[in-house]
Length: 85
Image (cartoon, rainbow, N blue to C red; front, side, top):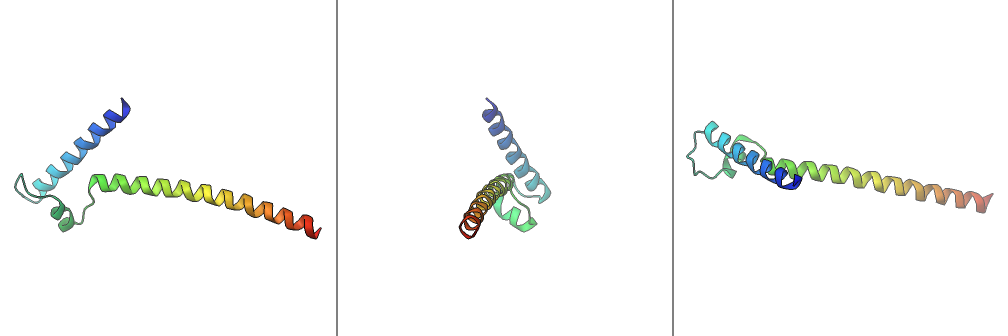
């Protein structure tokens, strides 16, 4: 149920963004909107959502990787200490 609401809100925002862009640029109603985004230097809503998702996923992956690397490094240090000890 939540995903259906999220999808419909996402579609509504995307449609509203296209309409606003066409109004701002005085374009025809059926004008292609991708060149208008490039012309004005704007990011599409869905591209922004994708970018934020990628940033979040990457940050979680980095945190997980650094934690596992730290644990491995600590275990390696303990093994060296025991051997040299």
